[in-house]
Image (cartoon, rainbow, N blue to C red; front, side, top):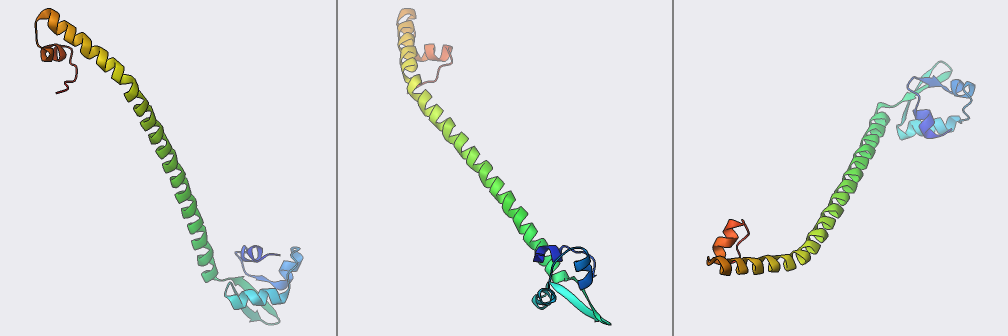
Length: 136
């Protein structure tokens, strides 16, 4: 029988109850748990009554709390890594688009130049008419 199984009992118990339930444990193992402060013991007549120590219970609950907190932080780190990867993909996509936009921008500026010459208006007016960004 493991220490966790012994400490899982919520009610007080005696050594013979453990044997009846099929757990093989020695009295010196119970005494070690008492000395470690994980179990409490009181002698009543000829039997020793054991129960879980509240200090051990608080310790176990704090370890469970730390486990859940650790799991929560690991999940948060995983989500942040996914967001970071999505951001990197977006940046790569935008960098790729910058390379594509340059030839189109040059073609649009050439068309605006031709229109300004044909209509005898300034290039600035043509760009403003089409709501195109100005490059000064």
